[in-house]
Image (cartoon, rainbow, N blue to C red):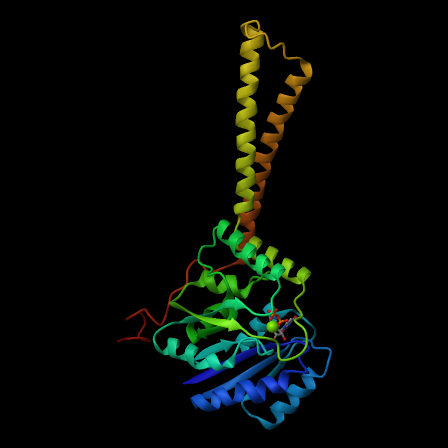
Length: 320
Ligand code: UDP
Ligand code: MG
């Protein structure tokens, strides 16, 4: 049994060795497992790569995968997962915020039959109000958009069984959010609550702009509900203005204005234009639905995923 650790690193020269020597090593030694640690250098501009290479020169279990430039954590994780060879893969950050002391808890859940174990961020220690509200809002919208499987506070501190990693590696879509994809994949899941600690050193590289982009990516890649909402909006407008238009025609022109409203030309025009706006919204939503279907096709996700670990008597691989 071998565990792979995948750790994306971007400009972590200050805390990296501390993470490895003081947090990571003592934990894996305690558990006494066969392991490898795959550091993915995500185009760091500081001494991170040199430190990693030096580490790899002395430790056989340390592998270094270096990307040609900064591709972002999502891509770094994806690259690392392709490189990992263990029976299970644990992904975690290099800044110490995701405590390696929990590694054993993850493995225990895995031994207990879980195929995906996700670390859920319980409390925020050094996070400001904006981050808290932002995170709440993010999960609220995600749920509203129909991705009900996402547990609020889920992080990328996660254990994946080999069967999950193999399937994940087959996914080809570009605008990817690891979290959303793993949630979409299903499998037997368990959760571990933990407190997001403080950074060992340095500053988080995710600023508001990046996080906002990530949020938009999540929404767009996971759901087409926004389009549907606008479609409904258009339908309601068309319906109401249609009724109003009919009322005016019947009341004023057919019955000769018994209610004495004396609605004038501009009123009629306003109603007519509102009616057309509604129609436009509907037709836009329909176009957008076609685009979302094209989008889904280009994402090229598998139609379904077989859980090879749980299936029996299929092709002789698993007979028990
Ligand atoms: N990271 C990365 N590429 C990036 C940004 C971050 O590989 O472009 C790494 C970073 O080195 C760290 C992890 O991803 O190990 C989480 O990053 P960070 O601490 O900045 O984010 P947060 O803790 O706010 O999620
Ligand atoms: Mg961090």
